[in-house]
Amino acid sequence: MLREVWPFVDARHQAGRPVVLARLTSRDGPGSRPLGATMAVADDGTWRGSLSGGCVEGIVLDRARAVLGGAAPRVTAVKPGEDLLPWEDAPACAGELRVLITPAPPEPVHSAITTALAKDRPLAVRVGLRPPHHWSAAATVGELADMGPAFTEELTGRPRLLLVGATDLAAVLATLAGTLHRKVVVLDPRPGHVASGAFTGTADAVRAWPDDWIARHPLAARDAVVALSHDPRIDDRALRAALAGPAGYVAALGSRATHAQRLRRLTDAPGLERLAGPAGLDLGGASLAESALSILGELVAVDNGRGGRRLRDGNLPIRAARATAHA
Image (cartoon, rainbow, N blue to C red; front, top):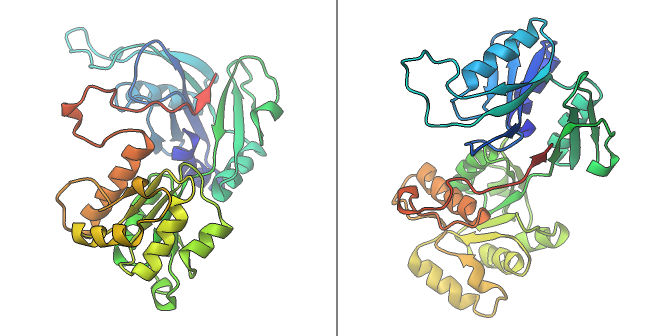
């Protein structure tokens, strides 16, 4: 999707370097990447993104570099294994992919995408599937220009992850959560904790009581709240406020004994049955990074309606479907 490769695209744009995008617009079978998956290829040989997780990227790179070299933009069919010699085994992935290969959007569409992603504003982006492959952008799909056959992606604001307590674990969580395209806000009423300097560039660190902040910034269904302070005066207020709203994941750090005490204190809190505690999946890790991975793993599982068990022990599709783009 555009969000995954846009920092690369924007950096090359600022440097005045041409970039070509290869976008998965359709396919005739299952695949490891969703429609809208994007590769960005620059004229300096660097690139980011993927369309299949590895099966067709070499083929797509060659065709994208041809467009960089002056070939006409186009929608092209790509089949895994088409670059193999007759005696080489075909890859496990199969099915023909339809890929739009075209220069990255020019101004003003480029700036519209950059601003929308930076400010978490919704934006609909459309590119024509026929020459000259015009780009357009608008606040909603209904406002986009009608250009015949086209591919449209709706960019949405990132779901928020509220970390209650400016702790060392919160700092690691904030770093990892950025790669999940979550907007991280760290809430702590203690001035010394917020001013630690551990969250520069990874989160908005706000000195505030969490329930007061949540009252001013209502939560949405895909938002998440994790209480980390180990101070009941802070954590309990956050949990009561979060559980009373629609946040999809509400969790609290602590041992089983600590959580039992917490449940007794919060026994009258509406939505208490939704509280995940102790927070995280059963990974058995002890380090800060392992603990953060455990918590974020549970968040992703809950967000996708999954239980978080080992893939080899289940039979559901490996990836939960999310509709993010359409032709």
